Image (cartoon, rainbow, N blue to C red):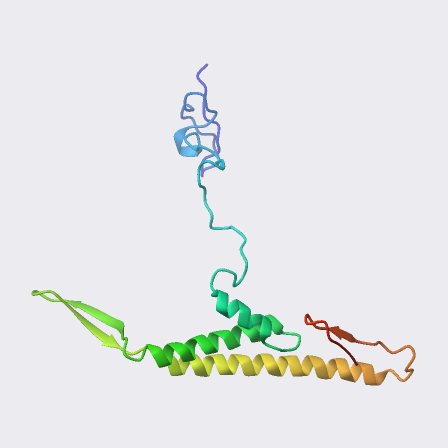
Amino acid sequence: MKKCCGAKTRAGTPCKRPPLAGKRRCKLHGGASTGAGNPARPCNRNALKHGLYSDRLTDEEKALLELMPVGSLDEEIRLARVLLMRTMEAEETDERLLSIDRVILRKPGLEATYRPPQYLEHIIRLLGRIGRLETARAALLQKLCDSIDASTDSENSPRIEVIRQNGKTGAG
């Protein structure tokens, strides 16, 4: 009896094509697949886990992130401030540079139309983001202070101790 692939088709019937040599399935149903791969051969890296901002920041910006003092939404506020500084530096240094708006193909050659980058829009958007993050941080701190004030027993009330990386402590 002739071997069949046996995979289900769209209609729900078994596939009647013969499997590839040394395989259990036909070419249409994965018989030609080489598998998930091995370390010697690169594979699909689309689902690779990564750090959120790890490869985008320069060494100077990473050092600045550590120095920026903020509250509980630390990383997002720090990142927004770094992006704001990056945009403002680009606005100062790259005013003479233009980005391509469109390219038109004509008989003698290409004609490119240039326009300046819209730095002001980026700055306004980043300032709005920083404002929203700071507002959320202030609301969280206010809720925390209200919950501490609500407890009347001073001995059983929660004590918050903040330890900064430079070694100084503060209690509230």
